[in-house]
Image 1 (tube, rainbow, N blue to C red):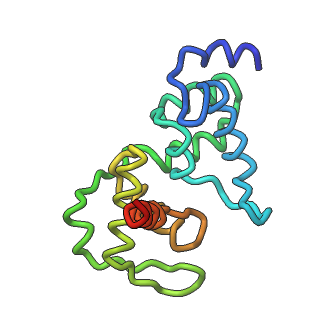
Image 2 (cartoon, one colour; image 1 turned 30 degrees about the horizontal axis):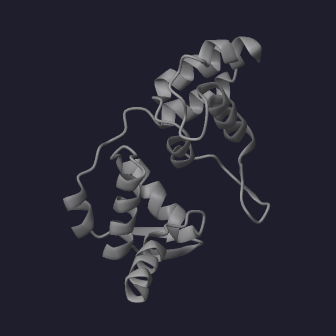
Length: 162
């Protein structure tokens, strides 16, 4: 691990720590899954990756396969998350979007779409169609809570009490 830490020390730090720690966290969750608050484990997604780092998946691939030898897991993750399609927010809000959530079809509302777009912008995440879809799915399944409404209510409350 010391050799890995010295090699990744020069990398830009992840969103939640140093470059080396970020890569270790990503590799662990990529292989073992993400533990949810209720103790269950769900698969690691591209959204999880982007919330941890802004490193390209190609750069992550070079480091992870070269130093850690996680060829199968890393290569599969990289292959499914390369060359992603960019989106244009104005188009997304008007398009009909129906997804399967917990075994039921759900038509995504304009408000849910806007919340996802705002989350992506607020977190400075790339404007990629796959990421947009993952944010919506994670929100609707309860794996991601977007707190914009809570923040607005706090601001409104603060104004009323002034």
